[in-house]
Amino acid sequence: MSQPSTTLGYALFATRWLQAPLYFGLVAAQGVYVYKFFNELWNLILRCVTGQANETYVMLAVLKLVDVVMIANLLIMVIVGGYETFVSRIGLQGHRDQPEWLSHVNSNVLKVKLATAIVGISSVHLLQMFVDVHHTSQHALLWGTVIHMAFIASAAILAYMSGPMAEHGDRSHKGHGHASAHGQDGAGGGYSVSTSVPAEFSTSAAAVRAPAPVPSAVPVPIPAQSTGWYLSSSESYDSYDPYETGAETRIRAARFPSRKQLEEFDEDHPRDFDREVLARLGKLDFVASRRNVVFVGPPGTGKTHLAVGLGVRACQAGHQVLFATAAQWAARLTEARAAGRLAEELAALDAHPLLIVDEVGYTPFDADTAHLFFQLVAHRYERSSLIVTGDRPLGRWDEIFGGAAPAMVDRLAHHAEIVRLEGDSYRMRRATSAWAE
Image (cartoon, rainbow, N blue to C red; front, top):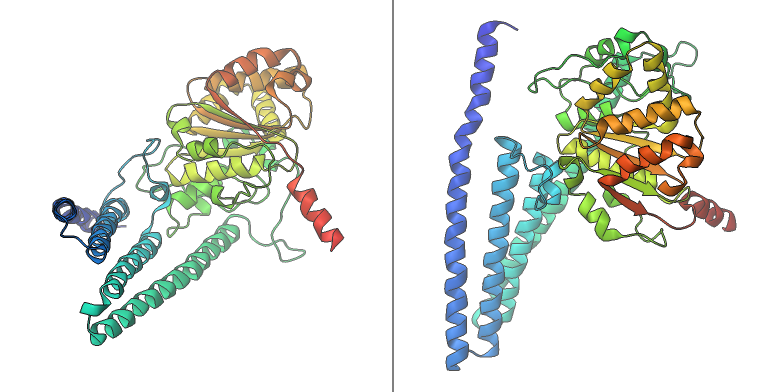
């Protein structure tokens, strides 16, 4: 791109800061609504104390207060969400009071939430008219109902259109990533998929090293998941998708086995599960404070689902994440040690604030491999976060890692949230249910 075009593009992009005073103006408008709320509340209290308020007046006054609060909530949504989407990142990742929706806000989400809020405000206005029906004309009631139904219809249409449009865009990005990074398989015309240990672990040292840092304005593009989970430097630029968002880029780079959301987790399935812990973990405070999370439970209780859900949310919040099973991590670290660059490999992983180690315990490791895991845990101790899933408690890790287990567990559990899941396998429950039918 030529220098004049680049300069013009940066200049146009910088004009987004012209919107900043508009959001500060909305903050002032919110102050006006705070004054209006307390003014209405004071009048209500005075009338109730002096006996001038009947039941209808109290109900209408309370509805006015609710109306003011809902409009103030709408203002907050526009101020915070709009500024985050159209002006600049606010940077609240890890803050305990961060709104849940802020970590994955975008223009579609913002529009749907605004439409829903408007429907709620319209409902309160319509309810006020029906409560005070004796002082409201039929003409006002008719048009109030028609306008409210129009709001509901427009919100439903907007929500319906946002879903298919987002899914279509995601499918287009995935298709582009597959085609550019891997091409079609000559025999079958499809794409190669492997569930074995990734072929990337056998590549040269130069290919396995982390790619050079790229300015945040141009996110490193990541191809869709295929034969491997580790990204080589040449692969990244061949599969660049200029229309992919930064969050989607990070999610692709994480190499999750599938995309899971915390909201999709069936909280009623595990017999013993602390839902308050999950809500707290969902705020990602543990990533900011460099703490660990360990999910322990029998197979099929949702450990991987929760680990991936937290990983996806961390990607949406701006963190680099990397996912692999314990066997894949073992292969990667073994290959790095054989090439004489284990220290380099551990240092390169520091670029990822969160690593996920899945399926610990299904396969015991020899002493050399156990020592590699110890080095990984020790290197990240109080420096970055780990999410580990396993089928047995930390006290039995000597069955997996032998003599390296005590020192490894000591460092992993020192700053960790241990989440225990009890119950039967969700997959077996569904299979049994299907067989019974």
